[in-house]
Image (tube, rainbow, N blue to C red; front, side, top):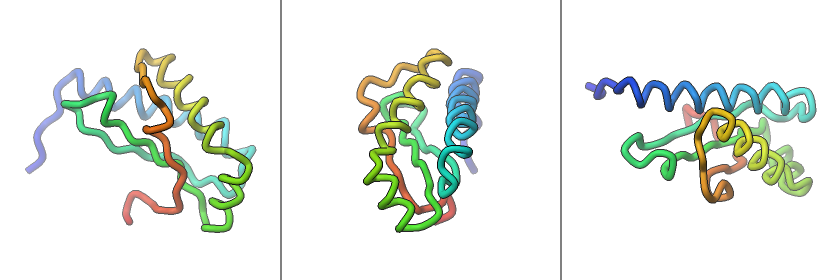
Amino acid sequence: MAKKLSVVQLKQQANVLKSLEAVEELAMPLYPDFVGCWFSLEYEHFPGSLLVRCQFNSEAALAAALEQKLDLYFQKQIHKQLFKCGILVKDIKRHVVLTTLSPDD
């Protein structure tokens, strides 16, 4: 049985979701091969444990995104949106990756 999240943890989760939804709204019209963002974290080590994955629909799309340096675009946008919600991630490069994996993989 999963441990019930505290009020603070629920707020952290909601703020991360809100931030990623804002990034998705900006990115989806610009990059048709972009599927969306998802994240994992350990609440006891937040925000240091936050890992955001920006999913693309194929390996070819991922390779093209890396070639266009979209990783930098997503890092900047995610960092900005998290900061708006009061979440400061010191080294965003370690916390954002581009992938073809889905949350179910």
